[in-house]
Image (cartoon, rainbow, N blue to C red; front, top):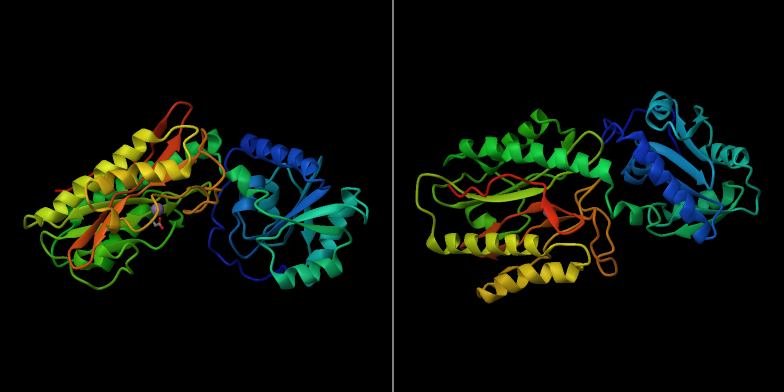
Length: 383
Ligand code: GLY
Ligand code: MN
C-alpha cells in the first residue's frame, strides 16, 4: 500500500524525465499493444523501489505510483509526496490523488471507473513485479479481472529511441571524463577504497545522481576476481588494477565502463601485458562485428573465439556483456531478439588468472542502422 505522508525512500527520486514527446510515443506503443494481448488496460506499479517502467512510460521519476493505461487513457495514481511531480513530469497522465490513510486499491478502482471500464474488463499487471501477497490483495480489492503479463513494458525498453540514446551518450561521455581524471591520481600505497572514492566523487562532479552499481576497484591478485569486493588493499607499483564503475544520470539512464590500468613505478609483468593486448583485441573485434541482425550468441562468440585462439579461452569466465539503459543490466531477451538499431549493449571481455591477476575492458556500444558506435570514449590507458 502507498504510505501517504511517509518519507521518500530516496534512491532514484531525483530523476527528471526525458523529452515529453518521446514519452508520448512510448505510451502510444503500449496502448496499441494492449489489443494484441486482448487487454483493456494494464497496471504498472512501483512501490518504493525500482521505478524504471513507470519512468519509461510516464516520465515520473518518483518511487511510489501506479499507472493505469488503457487504449485511450492514462492515469497516474500517487500520494501527496508526489502530486506536484506527477503533474509536472507526467503530463500525458491524469493524476488520481491518494489521500492519507486510504487504500490505494480504492483509487485504482476510481481510475478504472474514470476509464469507463466495467467489472468484466481484463486488466494486465506485471507478474514479474507484483508480489504473491500484493496480488492476493489486488484480486480481493480490485473490481476487474487481473491478467498476468511478462516483460510487457521491458520489451519496448530493449530498443532505445533518440531521446534515450542522447541521455546514454551524455552519461558515457561524463563517465569517460571521470576515468581520465582519476588515472593520474593512481599511486602505489593508495587503497582500493580510496580509489573508488575518487571515482564516485567525480561521477557526482560530472552530473551523476548516484552510482549505477557499487564501483569495483580490484588490484593485483584481486583483479583475478571478476566482481571483487573493493577493500582496504594497498596498490603496488606495476600491478594491474581493474576499475569498473558507472553513474545514473538525470533522465534516469546509466553508464557502465571498465578499464584496466597498471600502477606506475615499475614495469608490469609481461604476461599480464600480453593478456591486456588480447582482451583489448577481443573488445575491438566484437565492436567491429556489432550491427543490426547480429544475435547475442554471435556477438559473444566473436570475442570468445578471439581469446580462445590466443590460448586463454578457459580464463574468460563470463558473458561478453549485457543490455544497458535505465539500469546497468537492462532487460533484454538475448535468446530470441537479434540486435537492432537502438540496442545498447556492453562489450566487456576479460581474462582472469588466479595468482597472476586479470584484465577486463568494457565499452558501451549502440547499434546503428549499419553498424555500431562506441559511447564510452575513454582512452585505453596502460601507462
Ligand atoms: N560492470 C558491472 C557489471 O556489468 O556487472
Ligand atoms: Mn557491465
